[in-house]
Image 1 (spheres, rainbow, N blue to C red):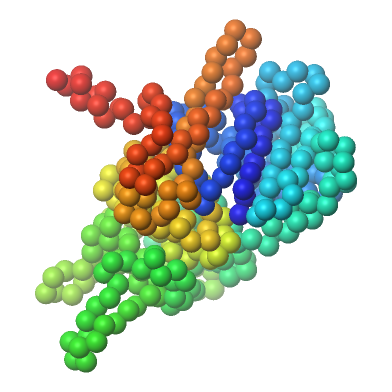
Image 2 (cartoon, rainbow, N blue to C red):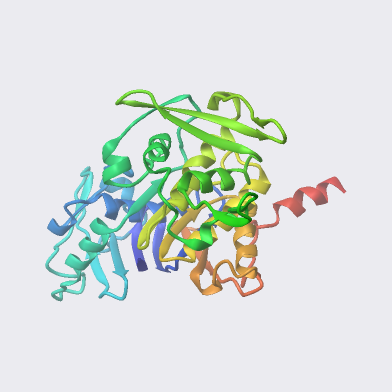
Length: 384
């Protein structure tokens, strides 16, 4: 788990120390720097040759561009891009990068930290990065369609659903009968009564829990996957009908974007493992506000375990779902960190300012920056 990440002179972030928790929420208007923070982690994660002192700006998770795109625009000649990162109570490792014009990578001396002292923490950092389970779901998730590709390397070897959620159907087909590891993620309707034996039945399989939680987004929905070849898997939805069983199977194209956009997120959360890092951009996309709030609760419940989650969102409902989860003790307040991003414009430069916000046991926030939660009241006031 990442405990600390200090960023200096990276894109719009001039200087900021992030003290991370299990659940880290990135809030703010568009273009304020939320993605910059996430891209710093993705750049480190995709740098397989970090041990050799190379930070890749282009890779499997993010394409930042060249060194000119990555370096803070107003950095002085003697100011370099640098990261300091700490995992799981290990020593903090500092990387100060050299600037090469038009390169798609930065270099640093892996034998020395930025203060010129020998540092053995890099090997621990590399081990933490390479060995941990990891899931990144970007904002551009795959659109609804009936047939999806399979990927053994993603679904089996790497245990994830793809950066765009494109392998979710294959993941469910392969892992659907596995049990959800964390008890607190079991949906409230998990326990059913066997009328014959009068005993409780608990079905904690991944597919059952996916169906129950997806029901918070679209009531009664059930996911069906069918392997149709060595390369493709079919995805369909059915809906429960009281007294009539299930409806016919529907193509994802015919039931709206919200279900298919939400499916990779619910799947990734329910399939999470101890020590995993999950990064999700805009989980609210195409989902009704009620479903967003329930998704916020599921995110919070997942982070209560030994799982670290970073969420970038514009949704009041995601935030409020997490606040309610704190108040209802689904997650400890000390496991939640909120970062609100603003832009500071001065005569000679402009940069990102990040406000640290805490949550108390009642779900109240330590600060309410302008534009964070007041748009509902702003528009309501105009209607009065």
